[in-house]
Length: 344
Ligand SMILES: NC(=O)c1ccc[n+]([C@@H]2O[C@H](COP(=O)([O-])OP(=O)(O)OC[C@H]3O[C@@H](n4cnc5c(N)ncnc54)[C@H](OP(=O)(O)O)[C@@H]3O)[C@@H](O)[C@H]2O)c1
Image (tube, rainbow, N blue to C red):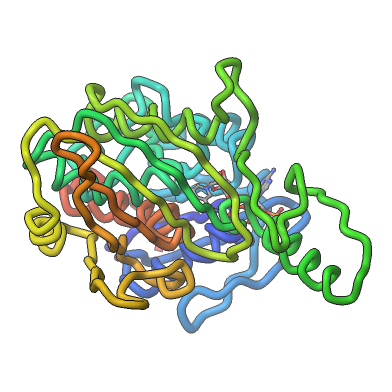
């Protein structure tokens, strides 16, 4: 018997991608239910060759649902994840609401798949922030071999990371520039078309933004609390896929060639690193793909045991939907997800 799976936020960027990936990877589901707010009642979303009509989260009964993939923001996750968990349904949540709870595992399967077993205390597993997921996939094999001391990251994050309204804002502002209409930022603090914005999420007291803080805290929780990380997160006028310029300091000596070889065989990683014009991956090429692409791997001669590299991945897939479904697959593979008995 297969599982009954609910996707909460099914009309959103991440939710739609979750439905695509569940179908693509033939997740063992007997039934998939699309849920969103009442506003979207009856909205059609694609699931493989089928079309699902979105139902209202408020009135849905989770009693016979086994797994809930949730991507509807923190407020919805805060209220609903415990209620859904209390019905015996395992929740994999994409928001930041549960990520820092000591009783909720934060999982990137290429890095810490075994941590999924810790879901039993709250019936919730958290998915990391999009920029963290692709970073730790690339850092993990390097950390295992050369031991990372410090990471300095600058991100170049696409607008889809801020939801479907943010994508519309980039589109409409770009159009407005060409037809000389006035531009009024709504979802972003400044104009995003033909510009970039060095602020993602709110400011913290120490001058970092919450997005930068998330990357630091999540890397420690998923990979190793001893790793020091500092980030500058920047929103750029790209629709899909986040890029990161990453500088890493290791305890042990490392060459660019050794790192390249190691990353070539590492799970989830794809090295594209030719020293010629265009011999690297850009966000446009990573959009719609599953891999974390690593390019521009080179030794940093200004520090001992240092490397610099360029990491690109589709934020809606590895950064969100794909990672969530890989977590679900980790549960299934470890026989930690049980299908409930349902009326025939
Ligand atoms: N985009 C990324 O790269 C990324 C990466 C990692 C994590 N995340 C997280 O994933 C979540 C969703 O992101 P997104 O980009 O998919 O946003 P989005 O495109 O704005 O979609 C939001 C979804 O949530 C639903 N929703 C909102 N309020 C609801 C409510 N009260 N009850 C039920 N459903 C509700 C919306 O339904 P309606 O259409 O009915 O409003 C929609 O389906 C966020 O927590 C985000 O932080 C996103």
